[in-house]
Length: 440
Ligand SMILES: [Zn+2]
Ligand SMILES: [Zn+2]
Image 1 (cartoon, rainbow, N blue to C red):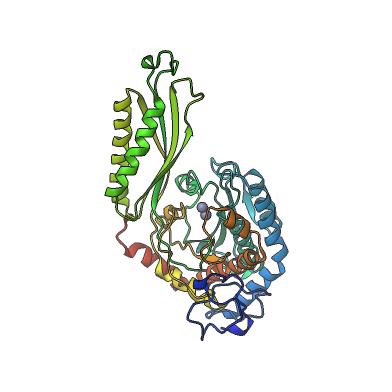
Image 2 (cartoon, rainbow, N blue to C red):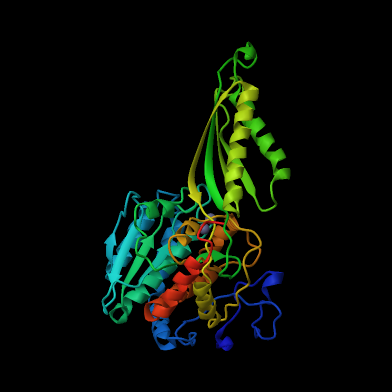
């Protein structure tokens, strides 16, 4: 590891270390910033350091292509299932680098499956490089998925450049609708993940860590239906669907006292009536329920339905509840995580440990299909909230660009280890099968 080439860039917060260049050996706080210059001069971690250095050199050469893609997607944010321009852009770049591109892939118009066989032949291993590219409605790339598109494509470009010396197959999966709808769950159901030996990606964060504990989660749409009436002249003839909605929010607020600390329930009202002088006959809300425990999650779901029914009963309205887009907890793969941490350490990235609290991701669903990691690297000062304007703006800064390029190299290097070392593939599968086998 060559610390002298590393300069802290994004560690602005008190917990992220000093802004001044300092040796991580003397700093009590780990540095977590990506190198600011080319990666090629920095010696990668063993094993296969020579091949890994060639991969990072290809990533350096493709820097403009990688960051061009990231910035174009950042400037043109498209929400879940509508990532038309992003997907077309990604497909074009992959074709340019020799991939056979299926786009759309399966039933999702903005999904991509691109493959490139290794020159050494054989069906295995098949290593999946994943990329997300959906934005948040009304916010833009507040989760920084533009950097994931750039790094995923960058890793694919690097591996394609040395495909002649690889066995098996490089499989790039462009996975839409992470923020809502769990696009990966749909792609899994349609067989697009079949035959994979591993699934790798990178997600931007305000800290750097490979371990994560995403929550089981679903979207819930609730529609209350009542009866319109004049709100002053004869309100007693109406049935107030907004009252039902307000009761539901009150019930959820009281329910929180009985929920375990790590469970989450949160929602917004999307339709709350049309005018103050009309008793609302229809209201609609979008809730999300989340839990780190799949079994506990199922009981939350039952209770939530009861709260909706209670609100309808109290207001003489009717209710319709629709669950969709289930994301699962993460099936941890320690063998793959260890390789990522080692590869990242060569570039001065010290793993800071899992975030104390977490959101949800459909990468959890993938983790129950094949060995999977969900590593995160800092693109913003520690403490920058996710899903915010601050994080959105951070996702197109020079610090984010450096991290995006580093992530491309690390995904490619970790994939290379899997291509080159059948024992690592076997160990990853042993980890996969070694746990309980059911989401927990
Ligand atoms: Zn995200
Ligand atoms: Zn997000």
